[in-house]
Amino acid sequence: MPSYAVIGASRGLGFEWLRQLSSVAGNTVVGSVRDVRGTQEKLKAANITNVTLLSAEMKDYKSLNAMAAEAAKVLPNGLDYLIVNGAYQPQESFPLPPTAFIGKEDLLRDDMLESLEVNVLGPMYSINAFLPLLRKSSIKKIIVISTGMADPDPVVPSGAAFGVPYASIKAALNMVVAKYAAELQPEGITVLALSPGLVNTAEKAPTPEGMAMYGAMVQTFQTLYPKFQGPISPEESVTMQAKVIEKLGMAETGQFLSHYGNKQWL
Ligand SMILES: NC(=O)c1ccc[n+]([C@@H]2O[C@H](COP(=O)([O-])OP(=O)(O)OC[C@H]3O[C@@H](n4cnc5c(N)ncnc54)[C@H](OP(=O)(O)O)[C@@H]3O)[C@@H](O)[C@H]2O)c1
Image 1: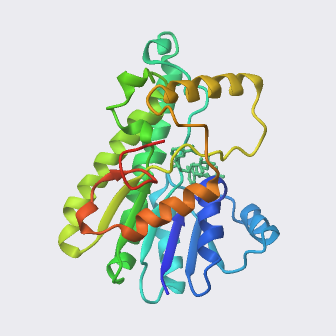
Image 2: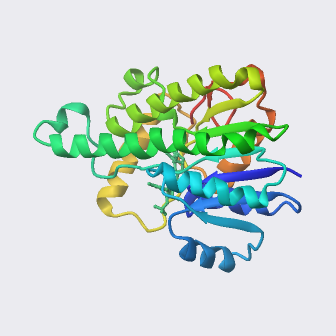
Image 3: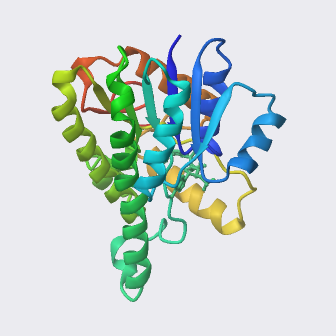
């Protein structure tokens, strides 16, 4: 039975990955979180017992190396699937188009650098830490969670000028994925950047400002995707992502695909 490691699994899509993967008897599931005790309680409340939870901070390569060393103890045959899910999602800068940072350069710099550290370096540290275990597997799949917002093609037609640090840094992540794919192809290791769709992972009810921003964002996306009704659930997204990952082969390595397995982001 396959083995999985999910990096950044305390909540949202990462927690849903733990829930779905651990529901299949025989799967070995490892999850990394920053708050092990808090997530243990959430797992217990959800009646999930067969997950090995380990601590890791994505900005800290030493903690990811230590996590991989610890994970090796429950992965005697190596790791089949590495899913790098966790990400920094800037809140304050998200609604702003590029020129709105005039006079807010500190916010721009802080969000760009934090995004770079967590969303580009974090996945690189994660992949490098787990490579020895992936090499021992016969499946060898690395999935890095990206976003459709990192595709430059729909930006001008939809007028989506917001999300500058988040989308730009995830676009850089897509290039990193292509570089790993190019290097690891001869070893039979496949690497994919995967967008989960627009997913409702909010834990709290949104504020009126949040709702207004969200409504405007949905309207923007509807210019390109008229059938788009709004966000999907974590359960639906992970189910769809899992199908894409299952089909993933060397023909797709290095690509950037959606939860539909193509370039339809919503
Ligand atoms: N939700 C969407 O609509 C959507 C759309 C496109 C792409 N995505 C991508 O899908 C993935 C999951 O999104 P989500 O909505 O589930 O996010 P989320 O609910 O905000 O959860 C983010 C996860 O990342 C972890 N994380 C953040 N910073 C970290 C760090 N420095 N070190 C370790 N872990 C860290 C968080 O852990 P803590 O609890 O410790 O903070 C949490 O488990 C992300 O890569 C996101 O960019 C989401």
